[in-house]
Image (cartoon, rainbow, N blue to C red; front, side):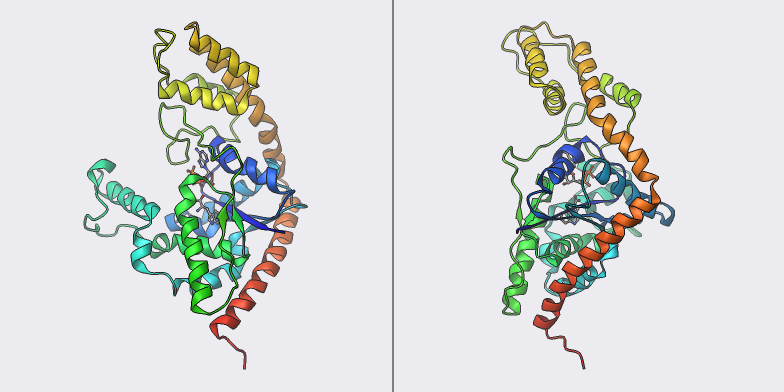
Length: 349
Ligand code: ADP
Ligand code: TRP
């Protein structure tokens, strides 16, 4: 059976973008593949979270995974740092990774620009990647080798498919480069080349409610799975709109198209049709559209939120899930590492 693996960094609560772009698909495929889903806590260390928050952040993602329907009876659910084999593979793959290609990674360049903008208190568009490095700026080697660690996550289980969003395509490509390079360097056939998993409907990009761009943790425009009805309603009612369509062929501005994208994700098809009709004949009232959208988002999020609370506080359950996950993930990764060590030339005396 093909192996599927994916993970999310433990850097804060999950939002609707994470749910519709990633989690919901994880839940759908856990019956059809041998699935590994994990919490990427090592990856979260690039930004140096405070030790007091580190564990709680893992617990948050774990609870939100389980509350959204990931089932430990069907999928292996584990914490990245519980599987030391991943870190060992990371050391070995680092020897096959070149500084030049890592420096060309888009996400690395973006993070460098962001760090420089912050250090200089300047807007991002005034900062170039090639500017000199500021004294004391945090561009650590972990950030540079982020794709190597991600490749190690994927290759440790010899995964065939990786369900991730568009923003992760370049990282996945690098995992393929390293799989090929390892196999060629050591004359073996240990690693399959991991591919993105296509869900038929294409990759979804959940927009924010602030007019343009995607919903994201760092964009500060998220509707979170842990938000209560009042918070959600407040966020939706504040969404940016325009002054309304002026004629039957008015082009739809991005801020309104975004509301419809969200409506399509959470509402019944006839509700979407109803408001599309209202847009076309220029009788739409944005207040009504937002009220409906808020109600349908609340109905989607509420059952998940209620579960999050009970799972988050269930120490025994979380202990059991992560214990079983650790055991299964380590068993799978150690099999790979035994092959890898042999190929590289390790031998015991
Ligand atoms: P964020 O951008 O909020 O920091 P992450 O980068 O941790 O989120 O993403 C975790 C997963 O959720 C990835 O698979 C990513 O592609 C998906 N994802 C995040 N935001 C969105 C969005 N707005 N629309 C669709 N998928 C998203
Ligand atoms: N880089 C991914 C993200 O930011 C998280 C991640 C880490 C991941 N390792 C992975 C995703 C392995 C898929 C497979 O969203």
